[in-house]
Every structure is written in C-alpha cells, then in structure tokens.
Image (cartoon, rainbow, N blue to C red; front, side, top):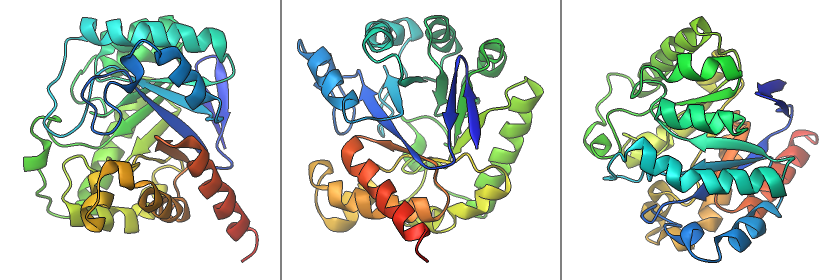
Length: 275
C-alpha cells in the first residue's frame, strides 16, 4: 500500500507514526513547547524517536480556538519546515493547515503532505491549489470551526453521516487530480464523548472508501475525561486506544509520544501474525 507524497513515497503496508509539532502558544497539551528559545533541541529530540512523518501546525485547533491569518500561520511554520528539511531529510513533512496560501508556500518549500482539518470545506481553493504538487492530502471530518464545533454534535446517524461526508470529499479531491488521499474521522472535533467511542468502535466501516485512515486521539479529552485525569496523565490511555484504532484499520497514528506509539504498532503487528 503506497502513498505518493509529492517527491517521496510512504509505505502504508504497516502502520506508521506522525509526530505532532505544534508551533503555537495555546495548543491543549504542548502549547508553547516548540516556540521557546531551545525549540530546535526539542524538535531534534522528537524526531530522533523515528516518526515517519512530522505534522507541523501553526494554528491551534483545540476547542474554542480562533482561526488565525495565514500570514501569521506561515510565520510560525516556515523556520521549522526549513530546519527539518535540512536536518532530517528522510522524514516526510506534513503541514496542518486549512489555508490554501499556507499550503502552497509549504509545498513550494518541500513539504509532502497537507493535513486539512476542515477536509476542504473552509478554503474552497485548497484542493485546486495543492493538486499540481501531487502531495498526499488528509481530509478530516469536522462540523463548523474549532471555535464552534463543541455545539455541533447532532447527527442523524453518526457513522453514516461521516461516511457520506468522506465519500463526497473524496470524489471532489479526485476531480481535482488528488489521488493519494487519507481520511481522518476527527476524534474530538464536533463529537461528544460517547460519539468518539462509537466512532472508534465503528471506524472499520470507512475502509469501504479507503484503507488510508489516520487517527488522532493522542492525550485528548475523550481519554482523560473518562479517567478523571489530565492530558499529562493520559499516555497509558492513549496507548490502549491506539491498539483499538489499529485493530479497526488505522494506518497513521498522529501522536505526541512517538516511542510509545511505535511500541503499540509493534505489539499490534505481533498479535496480527499470531492469531
């Protein structure tokens, strides 16, 4: 299972990790960590854990976050992109953005993947803008924006409604020539606590559309609210749910903790060959 990512190829025959690199002051878990004076050392420490992909984000998408101007977003992202291209040339670089202008600049600088939490809805120029670069494109499901999404959790049928969304957006992407597309169910985005778990239990339904499924549940409230803890105390819960996600078809785990996610994948693969 091969995913073409601009100038690189990603083998998804076995699951891979996507390291989260938030260049924001207000992300829910690691806000500010990678914008301090020693940010380069922290980036090196993250990437030395061996993720196949690093996902660079310049805008927080935590509940209640506001959408920032693409120029401000690019100002946060550019230096890290250039640094990683130089120091870790084998790592695939994903840019977490809803702005086509940011995506264009990033792909021009050598990024390989565009991770769009709006799934092409927020910026109608996104797909046509990135298509000539032939990147991989992540379509995530979300209703509204990070600022409004917690109020938009009504579905006629949760899994079917999201399935229908993906089917439509995949067809639009294909019409623009984007053939290497990944879908992300959007855990924590416009879903209630119980809806997140129902979605995780039924995630294999989306394999009818594609086997390229990304899951981002790392340290999210769907874990720590159940456990009565906090994001900092949610690593164990994250690993447990990662195993469930892998069982239901996840091929990319978007994570804060690369080492532990890679261990979960190794154990999952061991279970798979010894049924």
